[in-house]
Image 1 (tube, rainbow, N blue to C red):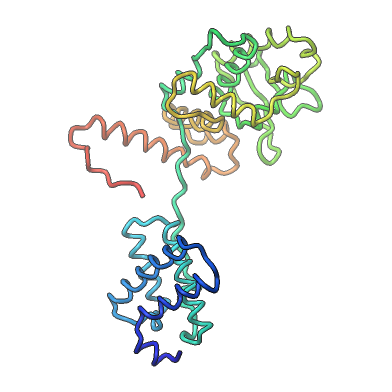
Image 2 (image 1 turned 180 degrees about the vertical axis):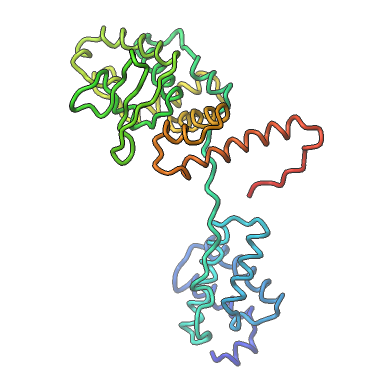
Length: 320
């Protein structure tokens, strides 16, 4: 089909031919074809505003339309999917000899904003840390309580927690020092750091170590947190135990270990406003990694403002 024939048939015919191509020749699922049709309808709507035929669309048009979608609060991921559909359409037009170049080829969607880390409120974090299951196995209860207290007290990664030993040694990746109230851990990139351990975490750890020593063979195992079989706990088992414990404690959201790390960082920052200190405690190599918690802190303050200020409600624009 020549460009003149295209102009005579119009954009509608071009789109129908392309959708037939992906349906029959590429054998795409019907739902995928329907999504392509929706994306191409957007393209036709934009082109009609110029106006310009689809075969005459230029790179500058595409960039302008991306900016319009972005200002209309469409997500970066949503724009990327639309651009992917348009890119495939113009690649097909090129193979048909109907366009000289693909106007979408070098266009990228705006970067999606990084989601904020999920952190517990102070009340929920304290509720989880203070929870004790009276009917549970005392050995497992003491162990799980100590893990929760230590994660929230010191902001450890789950891999740092699993790597802790009961005492320092030449081969230890990390260890706990109850007398100095410190945990010594091996973080990302092989970087070592020492973090303080709070009073409640120290008490929970002391209780756990007493019960741990009463288990046959446990004294021979160097790992701080072990299972009933005497082996070091895995990250997966800690995730499962923490999720179960948060549900038993009555929290609405299942909790995972990194959520307690986020909660630790957010709550320390709220109280101290010392970003550099939080960076050191978390073991972040770059301060920009820690700065995400300033956004989380502002979100907390914004919610408090919206709830308390009589003229704040319905003023804040929705998040994309």
